[in-house]
Length: 633
Image 1: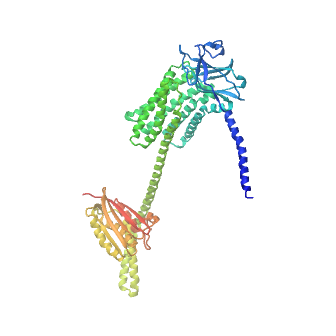
Image 2: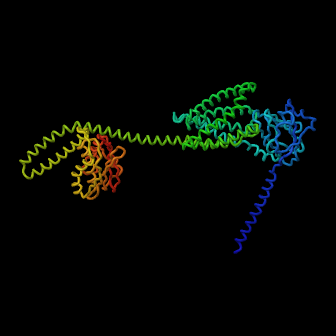
Image 3: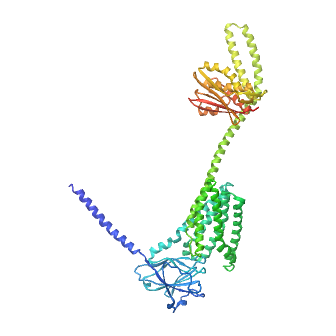
């Protein structure tokens, strides 16, 4: 029984082996069947000037064919340059069920193919001379001759790249893949640009110029990548001339937008060079688009300006433009401009690759197929989006800051309106109330002399409450009219000597201690009595917050023309809510407090063109900072 599990394991391993082994054999067989046969040898014959690609043009001329092989391009004959070339090869023995032959690239604007004497393929590429061809075959074509006639006004002729024979489905996958990735990349840029354009209506004037220019650049790049891809020319070859026109139009439209974007990022440049470059590029693009339109409308009959401005000059202008923009971007980045650094990184990659490829293209006489610029463009687009995104983020941060400032201004406005209402109320009521109080107090004092001992206690309490009411009215009057009749130069140290004389005994009774550190040469302009009243209110609150023991530190100093006076205690402190409400009328932490004392303090400091701020932590203490403009005699 103990060997049963082991036997089961061995049985399962055996079953898996017999199940997997046929799969491995099948996979190997499939791989073997999918293997393509390369074609490395063929023959060529140069065509005549009047060749039209008819098979009858080469009949009976088997003795003039030249043997060629892969890896060699044929540009012109040994004699006079020609615009057409015949290529022939022999189809080997075909064992596949659905065979086909794939040409990676045949150079020519017009391609015609014949199997024996039967036309099997024809393709027009107009201004584009890279042709990927997949030709279906059958087993009966074994040993047949395949004739290829190619014509090219640029003189670039011959087979370039791989030629292979294999299963149709396998070669079709390679065939479709050729250029499809370019279409996907270009479509991504184009779709993104269209989506961004649809968002333009929600921005108002907020960076609309930069946003639209970025959309135009991205859309132009997307169209250029799509229309430059061999995929369209391979599957939709009848519209080859339209693709060429779209490519040129997209390039001519994107270049002014690119100049505008750079001008907004790196500035006008020395002597306004980048502004002038943008204007020149705009004029050049307009004239070139008009020349392109005339060429297209005349079906190629009127082509002088098109050849000069679009086919010949546009590439040169693009090289100069990219070089100048790169120089300007690098110089701006060297000034540690963050946006210029991002732009230099993305645009530098694109510009260097594009200029290198264009120079190599011209050096090869147009025989080079531009490839890498499309992928370097992705880095450039990412940098443009990053720059615009950083600007949006910066604006968003500013909006948040402005919102906070607006909230503070709104709170200050509400406080000012509230104070104004209280001032008017205090001014209108205080005088009317004070006179009856004084009369009442006088009569109570007269009654004190006539009343017995018991009633004298009640009269004394009534007099104390009348005095407290009088003090409240005095505070109201001070708040309502903080202007000072007597303005003088005040020495901060001397003023605090008087304040100490009043409050030190009170602090000692409460178990606290007051220390001062004020230099003797600090001067401000203000009213002495009101100055003392404001700081007495502040220090009295600190004494009452000590709750039997503690320390009050007072110090002052001058800084950048401002005198700052600090009053700090280690009392009970305040929470955040109480700190924000400090100075509001009728708000107080004290049981019998009215809040008017601190309200008057704020009003006095404000009338002396000063500022007051409080910081406090519950259970730690409170610190008041009062700032005044320094007076220099």
